[in-house]
Length: 185
Image (cartoon, rainbow, N blue to C red):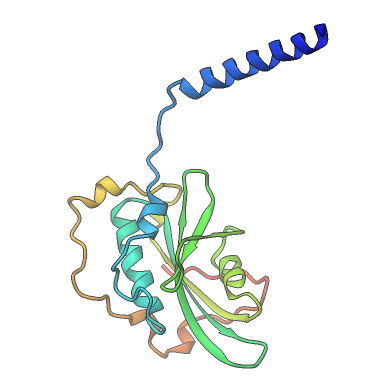
């Protein structure tokens, strides 16, 4: 009986400490990345061949919100030898985790690694990644998105022109699994 009371005493003490720590004021870091990634009605959302339009529109929102983001475009080959090109946006949250979002995703996907090549290989799944390019604003490195900055931003009304997706394969360096991705300026 005494052991039971002692265990209840410890449990009550731990509960009180956890309650006190949860009520303590912690300076909030604004991180609106998840909400920005779920923005409805962006150009290209849900389209079968509009991944670049969506990723570019989402990149514009993240850039205006001051958050680190990467527009990742990669060429792939499937095990059945079909080929394609895909674009998606990667952003960094307040806990330094990377998340990816494309035009067909319902919600952001956690991405392992810290380089565009690692993200593309993960996103491609069973397919082999042939080429990767990454467009980012290096001044935003390590920063998280703050949606309040979007209030005064001039967001594009027209769909962005897919200049990076021109069929100029020489502009995209060739990579194999595990190789380092090049980041054009």
